[in-house]
Length: 130
Image 1 (tube, rainbow, N blue to C red):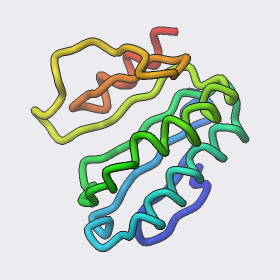
Image 2: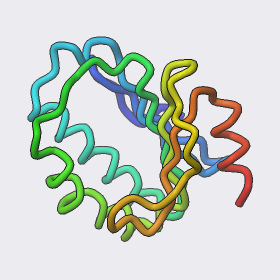
Image 3: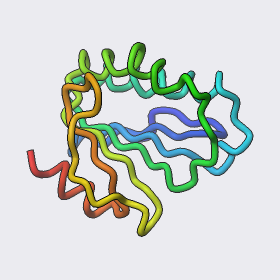
Image 4: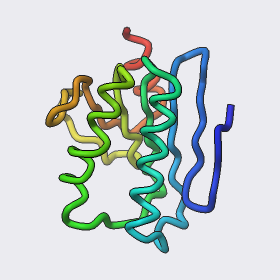
């Protein structure tokens, strides 16, 4: 079910599989840092509205470069909200062949593992694993 959309992103929720998804568009090449942070905040709000879900971020078309302080901002402002929403797992869908070989693991203060994958099937299998 589509939750919302704009020129940069579409948010969906698959209630059956307990997944909240953010799919970035190619228009992100023209996005501002304010737009980027607003949409990351929207993902946190959707996670809070649907506690205990997995998060999926499709970055295959993502073309924006975040500001140097983005990781610190995310660690301070977004990760605590994901933790509060009891996110189970977070996955990033990368272009084919771009996924690192490292296994999913918690990042920073996240209470959930984050994985990087190059196929939706691998993500679905990982999400389905509990």
